[in-house]
Amino acid sequence: MLENVSALKIAVPVRDDKGLESTIEEHFGRAAYFALIEVVDGEVARVTVLENPLREHGPGDLPRLLKSHGVNVVLAGRVGQRAQAFFRELGIELVLGFSGSVAEALKKYLQGKVGRS
Image (cartoon, rainbow, N blue to C red; front, side, top):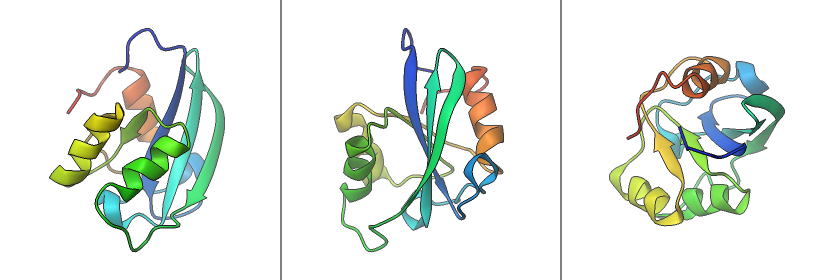
């Protein structure tokens, strides 16, 4: 988890528009939506779901889209090597290996029960 950050904006690639109950999309680049979660002082302050406007996208397009929405953390199942490099370049923390619901992934991340990738 990012250290000494009181406010986070976390993005999770998802299959549906159900907020925290959305199902995580296994492969980042195929996500129909992104759940955007604003966390302030360890508590969820706001949850929005962004429909992916870039279903057809080139290298770096999705990381740049998320950066433009103020995202500083991405929780995902799998992300290709090229996208991982873009996230690093953009200063976005990427944590992989998630499945299930956004709520489950968020809880694990905020409790520090996941490692950095």
